[in-house]
Length: 164
Image (cartoon, helix red, strand yellow):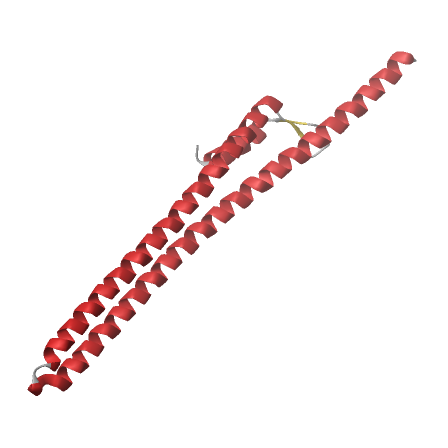
C-alpha cells in the first residue's frame, strides 16, 4: 500500500477523532490507529525497495551509456585506423576521430548526470514522505502516552471519590 495513502488515512482518523474539551488532545480509536501504523511498517520497506529499484535502474542506465560510449569510441578508433591508412586524409581522420570520441564522452557524461538528477529527485521525494510519516507516527505515540497518563489520572480521581 502506498505510504502517502496511509498517511492520509492516519490524518483522516485524527480529523475524525473527538476533541477533549479545553485541551489540544483528541480521543483516537486505538485499534484503527495501530492498524494504520502496522500497515505503515509494512509499506515503508516497500518504499525503500522502490528506491533501491530506482538506484538499480540508474546503474543500468549508466552501464548502458558507458557501453554505448565504448562502442562509439571503438567505432571511432576503427574508422580512424581506416582513415589513417589513406595518406591524403590522415589529418582529417585524426580530427574526426577525436571529435567523435569527445562527443561520445560528452553524451555519456550527460546521460550520467541526468540519471543522477533523476535518482536524487526520487530519493529526495522519498525522504520527504518518510519524514512526514515519521512525524505523524511520533505524534501518534506522543498522543497515546498523553492519553494513558490522563486515563490513569482520571482513574485515581474516581477512586478517591469512591473512598469518600
